[in-house]
Length: 125
Length: 184
Image (cartoon, rainbow over all chains, first blue to last red; front, side, top):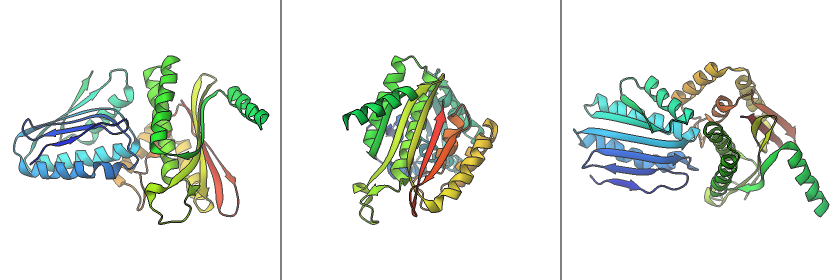
C-alpha cells in the first residue's frame, strides 16, 4: 500500500500517512470549502490501511484550527479508529495543542470523552 | 457619490467596524480576510483565545454565505457549483470591550420560521446545554442535502460570550435578509 501525502494549504492540513513507520500525521488548519469532498480520499486510504496492517499505528493530530464541518469529519474518523481497534488494530492517538489555545485543548478532551475506548493523549506544546 | 462613501466610512468608525466586506464571496477571499483580521487583532494584542474565537466565528459565518446565500450568480440551478458566486456581508469590529462578528445574506422566506425557531432555542441555552446540543448534532449527522454538518450556529453560540442576536427583514415575496451578530 502506498503512502498518502497531501501538502498543506492555508485552509487544509498537511497529511502524511506512512505505511513503513506506521505514523499518520495530520497537521495544520482544516476549514476547506467542501470538507467531506476533501477528506474522501483520506478516509478511503485509512479504511484500506487498517484492513492491511497489524502493527501499532500512531496518529498525530496537530490542528490549530478546524471548522464545525471538520469537527464532524474528525468525529467520523475517530469512529473509523474505533472500528479498526475492534478488528484488532493497535492505535495510539496524540492530540497536540497550543497551551494558550483553550478551544483546541477542549476539543481534545471532547474526543477523550466521546471515544473512551481509544488511547488519546493530550500533548500540550 | 464620494460624500456618501464618507458617510458609510463614518458609520463604520462609529460602530467600531474595522473590517467589512459586501459582495460575492469566495473561499480564498474568506481565507485572506481571516488572515488579515487575525493580524490586526494580534497587533492590538487581543489575546490568542479571543483571536481564535473571532476567526472561528468569521469562518462559520462566511461559509454559511458560501453554501447557503440565496443571492447568487448564475441564479439558475444546475449551472455547476464551481462557477457559482454567492453574495453576503461580513463585518468585524470592536466596541464596548467586545469584539463582534456580524453577517448578513438573503434567504428564502420559506426558511425564516425554521431559522427563527432554531436560533431562539440556541439563544436560551447555557454553555452546558449548548455543548450537549453540539454533541447530539455530531452524532446525528447532517441533514440530507446539507453541505455542512449542521453545527455552524451551535458552534457560534458556544464561542459567543453573550446570547446570539439575529434579525430578519422581508425583501420581497420570495426573499428575506437574514443577519446574525456574535459578541466575543
